[in-house]
Image (cartoon, rainbow, N blue to C red; front, side, top):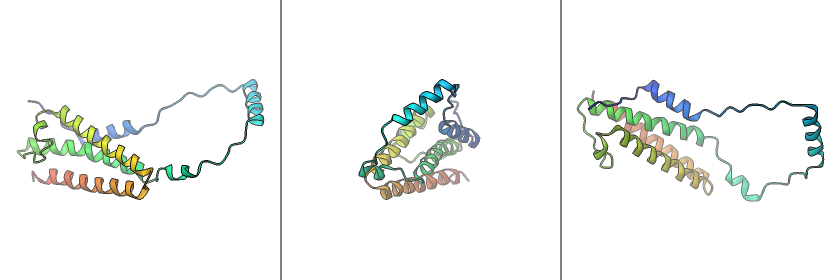
Length: 155
């Protein structure tokens, strides 16, 4: 059986492509467009203050980098697991033990788990920002340990 091995550069490329912003074309601005925009702006209703609960909905700045690092760690976990398995290590995670022979199934399981953790963190942040940050810090810490353990297991 041929296994697909993730290289660190492939993992980094996947993260960069997944996080890149979409490009949009600009419209050609004419005097008619400018005039219409000035008129619309002049007669538009003035914005009101946001509702009182809107401030609590704002995402802490640290969450997006924590999400990106968590996704990167999941990709590195796939790579380090394949690396360790190819060198004779044994999968000890009962949830993943049946999937070690199928790299696609392992990737799908990791993607679902990653999406689940990020989804829970997003739901949690609307009620408790500190708890959402703590969840992501704990998740990143745990995955960092798992990745380093996988690479060290075959030394």
